[in-house]
Length: 441
Image (cartoon, rainbow, N blue to C red; front, side, top):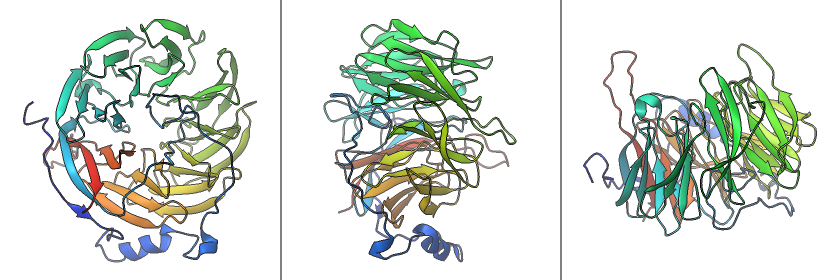
């Protein structure tokens, strides 16, 4: 292993209620806005009696955990204070501003980190590298931005070379690879021995595929090439509603029946000074599809017929994907306006919002009592999920656009390279790291 890839240890402690910024007035403003409901018990998001559970296939670890893409981990906890255990150097070195991929757990306790360098890197829990497997791409070609699905002893991931890869989780050997299109920026969905994958073409066009996970053979492709116009969005499946949904840069949310895969409907977002692009992951819950759009709105769309149930207007583009907590009946989603919003899943009303200093483009994740989210201000934030109050913040040199994950009590996340293409003559910095945080002693 070279010095570039070896995770250097750096123990830094970040405590509860750590001051966010030292600029005059910023801290007071943050505290005032962190939990807009107030501090009283009656102002917390109420807990809800519900029997709704996400569909989590046995033995499968994938982006947002469930087929519905909730990003909800009720059995995991976020520590009261954290310190850095190790850093994986030069995981992300490119200039592409899309959200970076996230770590996924391996069956025997390790993790795998994808990078925009085009490499998958498998690590032991102590940060020692097991294997490193390259795709036919690199930082100039945008590498890997999707988060892998881990199942059947394999790591499944798409890359910007348009290839879907199946990599042996133990050895790092490529078992099969299937060329699907021009590029793949979304994350695969694994269900019942098959992989659902949104694919991009350079015209721009797009399509959706179902691939046999055993051998990489294509089982189905949408006959009309839907979604069109670069589907960065990651698809979701809702077995109860019998739907597969995915968004696209054309501003449309597409809905198919599932598992028979007949096209059913499309929903069009508003067009302002853009096409209302849907770039983030879609989540499904209680008969609705939840997603953000570049038209500044967060939507709930009825899964049955594709009609709008409600929309919530933020202050800017929405590229973040939603997380859903069924015990609170609440949707958590970020915006380019810098806020993380907690919205009532039934009405779209705001419970609270928490401000950061720059856009939130990655997805939040929800745990037993807390929410984790990264921001382009370089912060990774832990918040109390019922109030929106800050627990702690970790500052990074690069922007945090990956989705943070708690795995075996530790927090894994990645950053974009801090300054890969300086616009104002500043010093170039292409070392975007992958991190492991642990509970502070």
